[in-house]
Length: 225
Ligand code: ADP
Ligand code: ZN
Image (cartoon, rainbow, N blue to C red):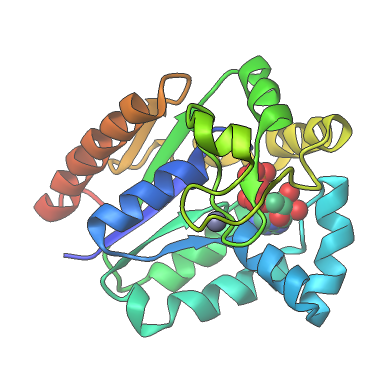
């Protein structure tokens, strides 16, 4: 049965890191709207050119553009056996559009990764990412951090242009206003789970796997969805 998963949480919660791990272990694609937008910026497409300024201010790209990108991605063959969405939905309108797309597909499992704000700011101001493959550097990987090279592809680690203090504050504000309401949007579903993201990455990964399995049991049982 397909695993159709959304990972919710504020910027810096570890969504990307955890989604990468889970996608690799389950053999399904990770679909990150942030990564797709950064690729569009790099490629210099029209969407990329418009998105760059919005992202650097910490604001959201329009629902219309993002929903179009995600609909097109979810329609591809490799998403038929499941997917992990990272960074989408970020607004109630996006969540409603996704529910529309999901009609007739295996129900969504929604996992919220919760982390206190002070910890988010600390993580984001010190975060390093690979400028080539986009993977987050593991802060405990001393070799990667001292050589400033990606542990996965060996290319240079950089600080994302939106990981500066002013933009981080704005992203957290935008999260509170637009994205946190999604926790209420989904919390009543029997396939919603919350995990404590303020723990070591391995502990969070284990909690995430448990949460996914318990929600999957509900989907398999077909109860009250
Ligand atoms: P974060 O570390 O803040 O979770 P992402 O890589 O997910 O960062 O997103 C970076 C930026 O890309 C966001 O601040 C926003 O400008 C834009 N973006 C990504 N996903 C969406 C979305 N679903 N809707 C609108 N804008 C988005
Ligand atoms: Zn890399």
